[in-house]
Image (tube, rainbow, N blue to C red; front, side, top):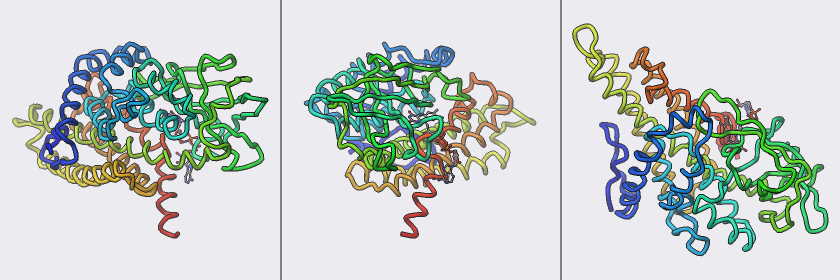
Amino acid sequence: MANNDSAKGDFSVPRTMFTEEHEQYRTMVRRFVEAELVPYHQQWEEAGVVPREVWLKAGELGMLCPSIPEEYGGFGGDWLYNVVVIEELARRGISGPGFMIHSDLCAPYILAWGSEEVKREWLPKMVRGEAIGALGMTEPSAGSDVKAIRTRAVRDGDEWVIDGQKVYISNGQLADIVVLACKTDAAASAQGVSLILVEANRPGFERGRNLDKIGMKAQDTSELFFSGVRVPGGNLLGEEGRGFAMMMTKLAQERLAQAVRSICVCEAAIEWTVEYTRNRSAFGGTIADFQNTKFVLAQLATETTAARIFTDWCIERFRDGTLSAVEAAKVKLLVTDLHCKVVDQCLQFFGGYGYMTEYPIARAYIDARVTRIAGGAAEVMKQIIGRDLYR
Ligand SMILES: Cc1cc2nc3c(=O)[nH]c(=O)nc-3n(C[C@H](O)[C@H](O)[C@H](O)COP(=O)(O)OP(=O)(O)OC[C@H]3O[C@@H](n4cnc5c(N)ncnc54)[C@H](O)[C@@H]3O)c2cc1C
């Protein structure tokens, strides 16, 4: 077993879950991030999207859907390979490529509930980066309250006919396939929700605006429209009316993945700040000489260490198949709150430079805010945790 070196710094803890193979993979991913992502990210932020070629290159290296089994084109790694990819992007502030959406939000539904035909058609392409995946749940009038969605799917012979719209869909401009939450029984509540795979080349599928966000600028978060879109009956994932229950099981993975990303940003932001304050002169010394600097960073480092230990515990439980929805809600709530606090307090030590987007801390600050909203708002996490307390 090898200790992971992704989290150097006085606040880091030994990590023993990664094997030599994971660490070799990490080295390869890290090289790719430095060579193929870091130099171009600014340019993609201006464009609002990451080029497809980047996906193909990542696919070639096995960075997309690494835990998809070999029979569907993956290399059948455990979830720690997904973790490595999330961590290596997060620690360098790479928020544009929606690899996590693709590998941890979209592919798991297809693998778990797609027909054999659907899995054989789409998963190998997703692994290679030839098909990009998105998850379409949120609508203009229903986000947290998923069962209130209005997008309709009606059975017509051997096909589903889909009408409706989605908003804030990550990978929306690039997506070739969307795992779409639809109402197959408008009168029913949660039991009326089904998941259907929709290919973006179907007539009636239209992409709307690539939304102008305050952060995550290189991520193509978009509107999607569906007007009489016809897909084969076999594109239904799992059973009709079970979509809500299916989402409740897979949302734990999404929430943990977000925590994995957030804790890495906490660690990276503290490292950047230690480095910067050590070198920035003021009042005949450095910013690091002030007791306030050390105390604030000491507090953040302590909380980050505790959150890292909890996150790693959750990662191991997820890998072993024992992470509960409540634990996933707790880790997302805790770590995304900390993420926002760390980037805010660290940015302060950079003074005016901290407000300049050429500084990673500035971009980390604007990218952070969404983590308390997307994938389930903090209040929704509290509701899940609170409900469990009074079970
Ligand atoms: C950058 C970005 C990327 C996204 N990517 C995707 C994606 O790929 N796919 C997708 O389907 N969606 C995506 N989303 C949507 C995201 O998941 C929703 O924004 C989120 O679930 C909140 O839904 P809402 O925006 O409709 O807010 P609402 O549901 O209207 O909630 C607004 C606020 O009300 C409060 N609130 C809501 N419910 C409760 C409650 N039960 N108790 C107490 N307070 C509550 C919270 O403060 C919440 O923030 C993305 C969003 C963003 C911003």
